[in-house]
Image (cartoon, rainbow, N blue to C red; front, side, top):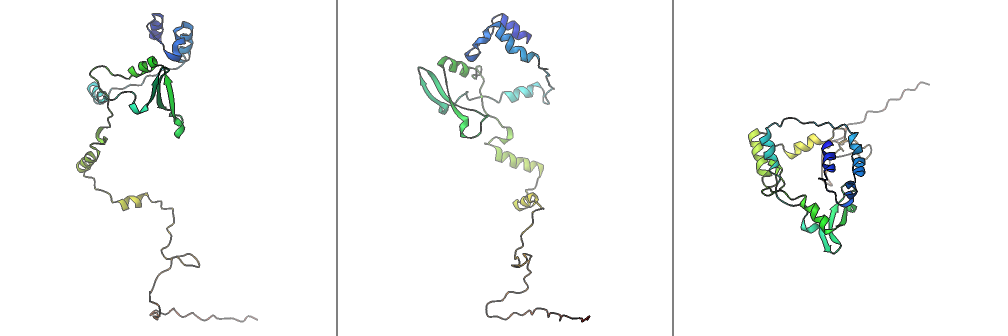
Length: 205
């Protein structure tokens, strides 16, 4: 905060667009006032692989620029119109149009241009799309992890509390019926039903 104040007093800071008013010393002090009330705690620890590993990781982010050509909509005397995405909104309404003055658009664009010798790319380690399948197969080979059949995975993920419907439900009670014999039309069944025991009545009168 002290370095910002010193840079502002030395007129080393430049403000553009809606932040032009911060050129005024009082406006700048009021803008920084809420930040002075914050308790700034910096958490840092030594990287596992050392500084060289951090540099190696950051150096992978090369290639590509800030905006793709398909997002550019129009260019005229009023400025540059382009598409942008509002991540606070869900659905189609998140895609909006913005028009900036040509100089302001170029200024924002140049903020994303890396120094000479750097390139910007997307990097996802061993899960990158080009080598993902080969790397996963190699990892499984090194770990000697057996492949789990799909049926076994489904059985593990199945919820045990869900009742399983019987294969042959009874039309009366809905319970499971046990097939003891199947015979075609006109044939006589080989199995006879068990005889029903006669009911015994006791006269207590």
